[in-house]
Image (spheres, rainbow, N blue to C red):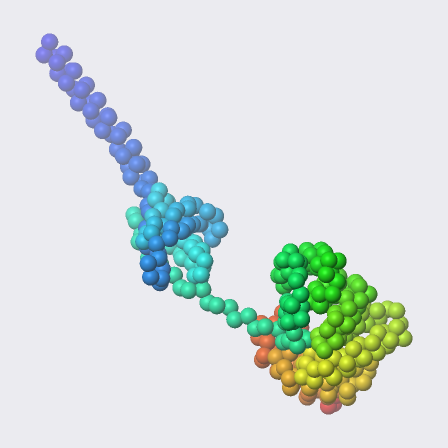
Length: 355
C-alpha cells in the first residue's frame, strides 16, 4: 500500500512537472504577442469656445485607413487596439490647414497633441481686366426694368457656371435668358463668351454685336469681338493667307473702335499687338504690346507676345529681357519650363550669330 502511495505521489509530481514544462513554451509564446497599443491626444483649435465635434482619421502606409474616430467638444481623441508601426493622423477641418501628423507606435500608448493652424487665405490675383467691365454687372438702365426674378437668378447661375468652366450648363441658362429677354446686355455679352469657348464663331459674333448695340458706350463687347477675330484667324490658317488677313482686318476695326471708347484698356492694346504681329507689322505690334504693359504690368501674355516680336526682328537681348521678366513675375506659371527652354535656345542662337 505504501509503495502504491509513493508511486501515485511520484506520478502526481511527474504530472505537475510535465505540465509545468509544457506550459513554459506556451507562456513564452504568449509573451511574444504584442499587446494592443493606442494613440490618444487632444486637438487644440485656436478659436474661442469652439466645441464642435469633428472626425479624425488614422491611416497607415500613407493612405490605408485604419480607424476613424470623433473628437469630443474639447478636441480629445483616442485610437485603440493598434499594432506597432507607423501611422498618420489625418484632420480635415474647414477653415484650418489639413493635418497629416506622423506617429511612430512602438507599443503602449502614445500621446499626440495637435495644434491646428488657420488655413492661409489664398490670394487669388484677379486676371487683368480684359474689357473694362466685370461679368455680371447690370447698369442702372437695366436695373430700372422689371425683369422676372427667375431671369436674374438664371443670369447669376450662368455667371457662376462660367467662372468654374461649366460652359455647357451656362450655355443652356443663357440661351433661355436671351429667349425671354433678348435685350439684356449682360446676358448677350456672356452668351458670346460661351459661344466663343465652343468655337461657335458666328454665334459669338452675333451675340457680341447685339451686346454692342445694346450698350454702345461700352468698349467691352468690341474687345470681345477683337479677341474672337484673333482666335478665329489662328484657327483659319489652313484656309490661306487671304482669309486670315480678312479676319485680322475685322479684329483691327473692332479694337480701334474699342480704344476710342476706352483709351486705357490694356487688353485691347494687347490684342492689337497680337493682330499686328500676325500681320507682320512688327513695329506696330511692339508699340501696342508695350502700351499694354504700361497699363497692366502683370499682363504676362503681353510679355511673351513681345518676346515673339523681338524674335522676328532678331533683337535677342530684348527677347531674353522679356523672358526673364516673365519668369520673375510668374514663378508658378505652367509655361515656365517652356519659357526656360525658349530662353536657352535664344541664348544659343544669339551666341552662334556672334561667330
